Length: 450
Image (cartoon, rainbow, N blue to C red; front, side, top):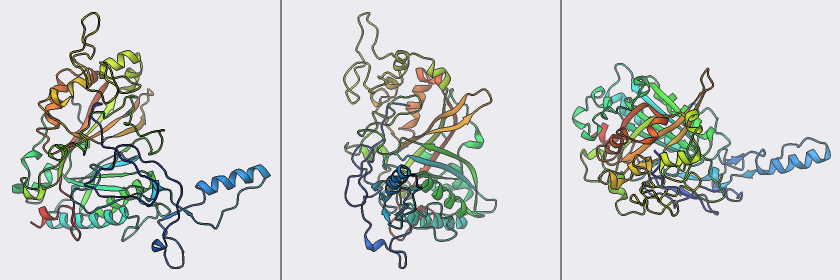
């Protein structure tokens, strides 16, 4: 769970960044740049500034005024001066592209996963209309615009905040729409694993949507718009909420930490590697043709047994993972990115990296080269009556073929991962995520109208 890293990105100062979904930014967390003026091309007549490009005075300027007011014994009055968005709010990810957004996009601070089942009587025609509505809404919201109809104004004062919306199809979708012949072999159900404790009601689904943004209100706004757009065509099957560290929260870009305190994702494939696309994306000549440039997402809700984990001394935690908790470096030495020496032994002849250490077992060279791009969220859904946290990882991994990516790694973990004592797989799903929509297209159009 902890030894593959997501390709992270940074936003530099200057003009607002627009990121194509098929190009991952340089590694590192997004950083907030100095506030900048907004171009007049975004202005709305009568307002002087776009309603979705305005940061309220409760931001940087408002704080400064508030401090001054407190010093003189007066409350700060609202200012009429417009304050432009910081880079965090202005960052935009493009909806149209070779691949769908939200796959190679840097980790978001806030995310939602939601699965739908088509309503009784809904078929291919209704599904096509739904994907058309969803694509239009996603394109508008990702550009920082309001939804076409019934916008809730939740994100009225916000910029796009790197919002992405990603769509996928589950195994059951194809029978519901009469498209069984177009169902990919790679979408065959995942095998059962002995460590699974799956809640079937929170697993799978006809349709799957991933929403991510660096502002929680922007993310919720998109989630609500997608749910409303479903209308009578589909009903919510399950929904999960997640989070990551906010961009700019660390002094320097670094791999994210999970709720166990471990650096989570050190050995993720990187876009700079020559075989990255081969591992993550279906080739343009792939089968079926509608999945060209797409990917397969495995989604799992993994509960962490934090009370048990936190009772372990740090040294014991490190032995379970095979890496230093503080730096992410392998127990065999070096830095986080130093190759792990699997043969290194201590003075007593014992392996420095235990044979059942999580980081050892998940290495591609220990699994016939199997690799996947992990892009997870942490979750916390409160405490039970005994005060035990319901928290852990919304595991999301991307690969060109789950039979060559997720499955062999999970099978090996199932046979003896030291971490399995401290986690529980509670839900699971596998979804075919088609390539990005071209200008004028909606996601899945080549499947639904092909």
